[in-house]
Length: 253
Image 1 (cartoon, rainbow, N blue to C red):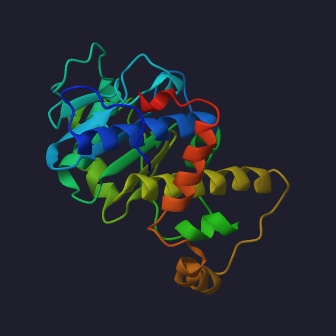
Image 2 (tube, rainbow, N blue to C red):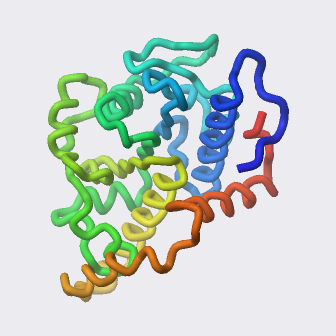
């Protein structure tokens, strides 16, 4: 992603690039209708500093997030910059847990989209009833709702239920995805959101056609053949950044 505008004094080039990419992602989420007032979170680890990550300032809408107002915190929740904004504990507890224990969880996204919450709130969760749902068959973890995630002791159960998967439906709650890069996490979230939306539409029409397991296996085997070079989600995310740039470039500040 091309860098624009001078970086904030005291912030290194690598951190500024991470801030801009994350700020862009918040604007992309807002453009796609995935904002939830001032709630929900996307976080990224800082390059070269595994004990620190960036999170949105609590109190701002996704459309107000900029590179400069993202909050830098450590894995224990301590602010590492002079941000005047607080951090939502409900976001910190869950994201810090996964950033601490999962080396490959560079980026973590959690949303309360209507489709994501709806599918997480029915028995059976996501079912193989459409193209995108087949991407995730056998790859989604589930965690029962225990109330708002502000208690550290829930972490052990979250990790146990996640296991070796990096996509989770929090039952009665919403979507949680992780990626080795932000674009990878983005394309996972986008595809899972689409899968949920289409499942809602399909089930409203009657009995769904389930894709057979052997076809799901072929689909997952061959998916890489339909991807653009550059890494999972890279071209997709870049396209969305160009789109939001045509509307508002203030996220770069």
